[in-house]
Image (cartoon, rainbow, N blue to C red):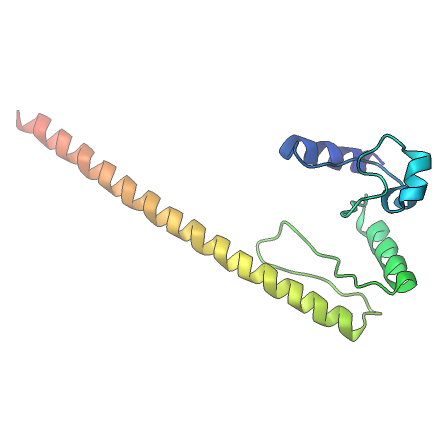
Length: 147
């Protein structure tokens, strides 16, 4: 539970405009009737669209249970924070799971290429600015030495 509290605090610190709450049990997070009983004053309970789990094992078990019992489309796990897009499939993955995960990875790859190109452009601009500043400094120094 401490990991979920920390994640909730982290999201609040980065994006105070986003409604986020936790920890909340799964049933109270997604079922408005349960939320009305357990957390009647919560703006998030019963309407959660993103769930954060304390570890990969808990997340995997929950999403597989929901996917199979509700016949829902689930894409994941989606791994974040790596240099390149990487996603995982479990041994029991269906063809639809594979197709959806490949599609999600392709979208991530497009974003990864965009970010890499943007950083490269920023470095070029920075490099150009550094060269320009160095030339100005050299020019100033040459003027001072000439005097």
